[in-house]
Image (tube, rainbow, N blue to C red; front, side, top):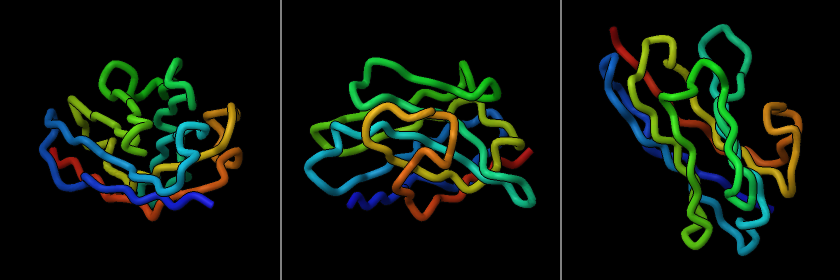
Length: 124
């Protein structure tokens, strides 16, 4: 069982930056692929970014590529999402997710564990 807790959301102006963090419990964090998803009001949850358990490869949605960076610290059991050049369309609840091994990282149904989400609001 893995419990995930996100933090770092908030209100920011367009063009600004935020850094989201996800803290995980458990001693096997290093074996989990970690993903970030988001859900805007009235829309389906969508993939944002993922990082393999090895940290050797990262994946991004086209909409955030070049602006967002995912990273992990296995010693601290955390995964982070650095978000730069934020746009109003980035406004959503952001969720951290975990799955052991190497899933289809863009598919939310591949993930076994989810955090409660953190709100990101970007004003124009």
